[in-house]
Structures are given as structure tokens and as C-alpha cells.
Image (cartoon, rainbow, N blue to C red; front, side):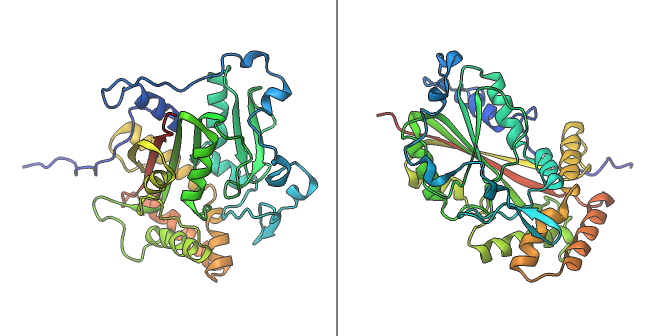
Length: 339
């Protein structure tokens, strides 16, 4: 008797590649859980005629102390292993390169700037403020989007009760104290407002045990886990349930967790998920080395040649189609209690 194709490991994603903030908005309106919510994300209907002073209204008086202006020192990037990294001025520490190659890879993988720009364009009456540790922002942004240089590990410079919605993404390996960071977000958020955290696991997994012991796919995740431990900035955010626990400790209520799996490579039988896998593969293959060099060489004592060998083997394994890896993703959102 002829047998059918092997069963594809179960992968769950939203019905469309929806930005995380839109998932939150849909969930808040009860489209995911079938319950209507009384509260809605607020907008500033008077924003059309904003002035510079309006844009500054959310900023605290200690702005100059911990929000960096675009002075020359911010552009003094470090060069390590032939790649550039953010300036070491101040307290900011980040493990990924910030040169053009890395930025293009990150744009494909997490689309942080695109998400902010799209949100600002689709909500023209809302004031949107985005922060980064390096001046890698695009030359054009919507007029209601303001980008600043700031390290979220420091005390936030925004006035208390300033924002209806705070979104954070791809912070793994860069946060020293997640509870403290969420407390800063709690303070900056208006009563009844929402905070959302979107994170991706650095470890490849499979539901059919198709990631061999000792493979490059397995070793990839080990570099991040060990490097994060050495730096005191964990990458095991999803496995350790850091987002939910830290939001609870910070005082948020009505916390919800959305778990997703994103296939890596074109192995999945379902067309849309196969497309997602191709996008993930294109994003990481564009710059495997840029993700690994700092952690492996600066923190774990690897040589550049060892990193290149791992990346070469990883490309071979993923392109072979014999493995079914995916990355876990988690969206956690919670509400600041009403007064």
C-alpha cells in the first residue's frame, strides 16, 4: 500500500504575517479570544497641529543626562573582527554588529524600524517615539515618528504616565534586569495603557528530532546561551518565561502570552509557512557571522576561523532540507491598572 508524505511537524502562526502591535490590538478587541474589551488603545486626536513643544511633552527634565544627542561620539563605532559595533560611550552593550550588512539582516528578521514607521503612518494622529542605542535610523520617517538614542537599561527619560502603548522587541541578550526595565515601562505608561514585549528564541528546535546532536544548528544556540551567561544578559528569555514573570513583578495585570513557531528554511509543506521559513533563512544567511562574532570571539574565546567554519556548516545543514528547525517566538502583553 502506498504511503502518503511524512507528517509535517506542527507549526502555529497567526493567519497572516501580522506585526506584533496589531496582534495586540486584535486581541484587545476580542478577535482572538472571543471576548469584547471595554478599553481601547487611545490616540491623541489633537496631534495634527503638533509643535516641537508637543513632541517634547513626554520627555522628562533629565533628558540630557541619559538620552544621547547625535554628537560625534555616538558615531565613534568600534571595529572588531572587521565589523562595526555601537559606540562604547555610556552603558549600552549590544552583541550584534550595526553595519549595513547587519542592519539589512535585522530588517528582514525583525523589522523594528519598519514596524514603528508603519504604525506611525497608519495612525497619523498618534505621536510615536522610538529608541535605539545606535544612530542607524533611515533618512525618512513619518512626521509623527520621533527616533532617539537611548539605552533602555538606564532610567527612562519620559515623564510618568506619558504613553498609551509601549512596544519592545528583540531585546534578548541586551537587558541586565528585565523587571527593572518593565518597571520603567510601567512608570511611563498611562493608567489603563498597555505594554507589549516581543522576543525570539536564539535556539533552533524541531518537533521530529531532526536537529542532530553536535550539529551546527545545535551549536548556534549554545553560542548565544553561553555568551549571554558570560555577559550577564540572558538569551533564554522564552525558555525561562522572563517576560511574563518580569511583567508580573513590575505590577502589570491582564497579562496574556501568545506563543508562535517560525520555521527556518523552506522545509514546511504549507505554502505560507514555507515562505516564512525562506524569509527567516534569507535574513540570517545574509549575516550569520555578524550575529556570532562578538559573542564567540570576544566572550567565549573562539577564533574568527572557527566562527566561519560553524557558519559554513550551518548553511550546508539548513540548505540540505533534511532538517526541520524552527525558532520559538513569544508575545507577552499586559495592562497598567486603572487608577
